[in-house]
Image 1: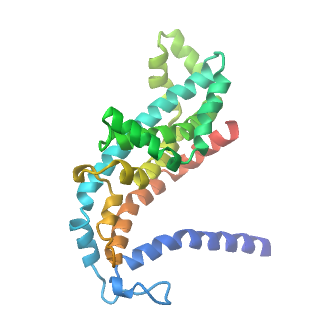
Image 2 (image 1 turned 45 degrees about the vertical axis):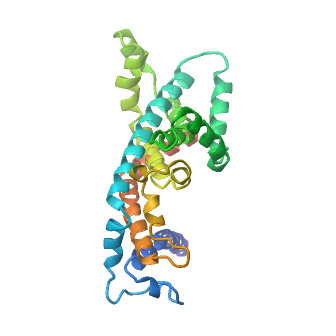
Length: 272
């Protein structure tokens, strides 16, 4: 009995520690900037400062930047998923020389920090005319997410039986049709997991937009926070309101696909 109470108590403490940043963010998004400094961790807004949200939507240009983030994130997810699924299929179902070496080289990408690539990417994008375009955000996003996505999908494909693929080949499907009509439906849990991971990485990306984007029409959601940052003072209430609005899609998607995320990552971790 005491052991169960200890386990549940530990789980409850961890849950509170995980949820507290969101509660703190939501709470302070209703406070004026003058009430941000003090000894209280949480404060009851009296009254609720709704102006923070109206400032975020107007001066922060959240709707405009939101659409740009949706476009960049959606293209990054689709292209990362398609490239990774074909690469994983080549590594697990096809036998060719150096496939283990090539897979190892690709997986090294998981330990490369994005900061080390900024200068090189900036010069490349400038020389080929991609600087200050959506592609300057999409291409790095795909490159940095392919290693972990390929790792998860490779582990998931290894765990799947090959009988259905063999029947599909006998029925006349080529490699492209086999992947699109048989492999992708079978890999739904892994695809859901990597889609959420890519979404979180692309949606919250701050350093790439700040480095590669200068046009107002192409800016993404992180620029909404900068709108309220001054040299001598900042509108902290509006910044917290922007952060709250940005976090809502991430939390909703994670809650919707949490089961698929667990299945996909566990399959990749065990078999990969």
